[in-house]
Each structure stands twice: as structure tokens, then as C-alpha cells.
Length: 106
Image (cartoon, rainbow, N blue to C red; front, side, top):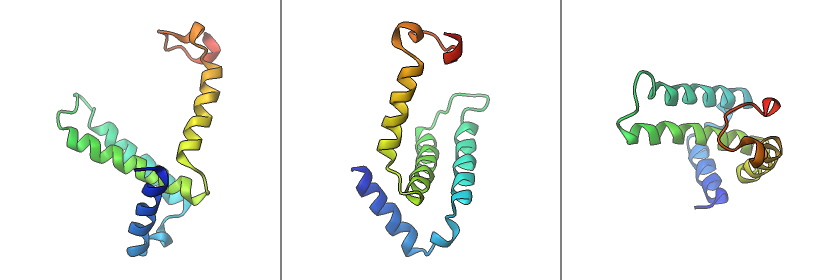
């Protein structure tokens, strides 16, 4: 399924329930953070054993990210690829391979 198809499905889901009124940028950003915390909670004190919970929480995070991007007319795929190019410049392979140092310490 392409990004366009995913957005079409998400828009239809939201529209059918008349939830657009609640999807302000602030609420969507809050929801991303809340769902990310729920994802992180799966790792608290252990490795998640049940992948279905992991998949559900990750899907929730991604869903709100897609909805926030859509709110601003942004393409998630383009966002990721653009940021990847910036990150590649910050972390050149010859300096960053096998290291977890921040770019300004390489």
C-alpha cells in the first residue's frame, strides 16, 4: 500500500467518525507523544514478548504522524527521505561507522 492509499484510508476513517474537529496540530502532536510513551512502556524492565502489542503501538504512533503530516500538506515519504539526506551529511560513513557519538563529536 502506498502513502497515498494509507492517507486515503486514514482520511475516510476519520471522516466517517467526524473526528476532524479533534485533530488539531496540537492534539495530534500530543497523541504522537502519548502513543510513543505507550510503545516505550512495552520495553520497560523487559523485552516485549508479544509482537502484536508492539505492532499496535507502533501503528498508533505512525498513524498520528501521518495525520499530522497530512494536516500540513506534507508527504511522509518525502519528509523521511529529506531528513535522511541531512542526517547522511551530519554522519558521514567514514566518521560514524560503528559509533553512536553525536555528529558534533565525530
